[in-house]
Image 1 (cartoon, one colour):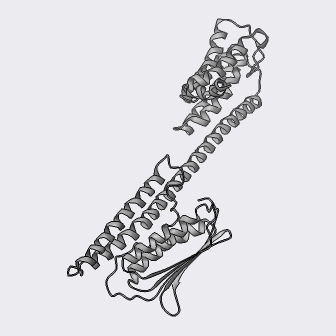
Image 2: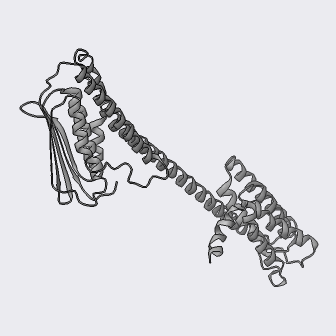
Image 3: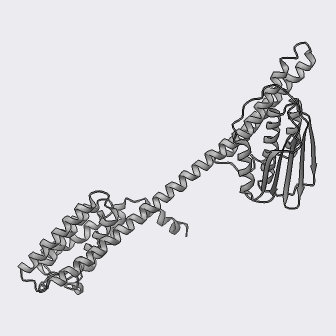
Length: 384
């Protein structure tokens, strides 16, 4: 059974000419059967003629070139048309005349250049064949020739339709692939922003504070140790992100472990930001991407607090409810006159997109009494 299932895949590995050859061989075999002689296409009204060596050559010229119908469609159509002309002019009327329609459709579907001039050229060849058939005693009137031409034009048009449909599908796949790449680049940029900005902001704040602690070695040592710990956490988070980008990623490396929110809050406190942290409820066993999104919301809000309201009282409240996680991070007005590191402006927009993807609600803005608050309601259990 396994070998049988592998046959289609093995067949597709062959060159396209090899895969197209069986159709030509099948028509060739059918056309050479005595029972099928003079039962094929009859154009021009010439009387039938018994098969001879030239008939076999004409049949072969119509059937065997079908192996080239996708690789070299113009050559295929030229050879098949030559064989068809001999077939009709000699009155063999073989079943191989079917190959003319197949070659014409394949040309319409696979010819890439000079399509209109070639259509006009083969139309002229058909007119010349019709005149030649009448010249050697053909009894069909103009209407029959016109009807056959229109039938062949329909076949060409069908091939052209197949070509345009295939091109439209290829363009659609390219657009989807480009949109996917763009979305992936955006996601990676957002992840890098979330991971790097928070840690680097904390390190910058801690390093600036260390400049004023040279007279207090103990406090300086604590501050530098905090910078070191923050750098290590940044490296750990970057490794998690690289795990996500690894083709062998199993889907768990990027999810923050339990207790990471408290670690995040402690890190922000070490950077000099007074943070009050409250976590209510018990996280369910399966939350999908909600835990990661909640973590990113808190991370980005604390990063902004360090940047724009350093030293101001900050409150973090996380509530694990039935089927959702709610997050609220509020910061009082700016209390530090020190300049804060610049931001990219994509953090809050990225959070809104994350929450929206999971069907949640997100808001961020100033409070009436001053300060800034970030709120998010994130449905739990949704896949990323």
